[in-house]
Amino acid sequence: MERCMTATETSETPPTRSGFVALIGAPNAGKSTLVNQLVGAKVSIVTHKVQTTRAIVRGIATHHNAQIVFVDTPGIFKPRRRLDTAMVTTAWGGAKDADVVVLLIDAERGIKGDADAILDRLKDVKQPMLLVLNKVDRVKPETLLALAAAANERVPFKRTFMVSALTGSGCKDLLDYLAETLPAGPWYYPEYQISDLPMRQLAADITREKLYLRLHQELPYSSHVETEKWEEKKDGSVRIEQVIYVERESQKKIVLGHKGETIRAIGQAARAEIAEILEQKVHLFLFVKVRENWGDDRERYREMGLEFPN
Image 1: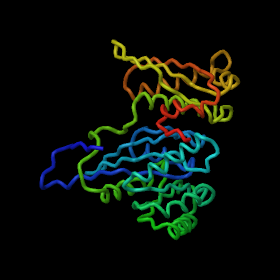
Image 2: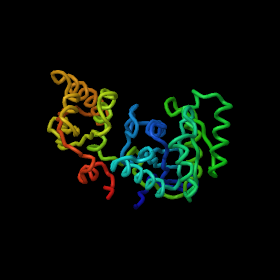
Image 3: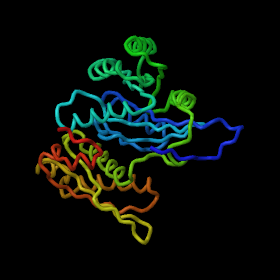
């Protein structure tokens, strides 16, 4: 990828730095929340539902003289379906291509299950690695120290940081360290760009977030949102048409709700957030379609930015 220059440097100004920082971890460790906190804006969706992030999302933070490109990867877990395999492969691919790899561990859950398995695989990673313990405000200091020691015994982390992705506590220390240690060189993106995610995809992700937040218990994981039409109007507004794909007719009824109440509420919440990000009026139209076994549809993977596993 070619880099683009930003402000003109002089002999008196420090050299600019830039690099890609991959965040990996178990599902619901808080990666998306942390990326949004570090970037200072919403670039990745956050829900209580595990494995919400499906493809790689890049959030761009400017800190001092450095441009830090955070790569929010899907949660790493033991795959059971084709979609699971694609997401886990994508996550490890994001780590492989980064300048720095950051392992995020939920301090409340500790090192067990998926987090334990990730630590084993990190032994083969060649890039510099950092350990970030999240949700530290909910854990006793002695527990945090023991957790950090146990992780560092297994993997040679360069540094350990303790943060709360939700409140931002400890995040400045992480930004300071990355800004000082990333490779010297010009920036990859324009100064005020905060993500490389196309707006069509971000808008679809926002609707998917509202869908999960509204139907966390009722709706299975196997649903997907695509932006099919995006039309800029002469009055400065934008008309967006999106399709929510589900696998069964019973799921379609859940999404629609009684007399369309549920999909109206989802649309209102999504429209408000998309309009806030675009800073223009949004006309959002949602449609629900049944597509059986869409998790085996190669075209859907392409739309999500995932490789289709054979």
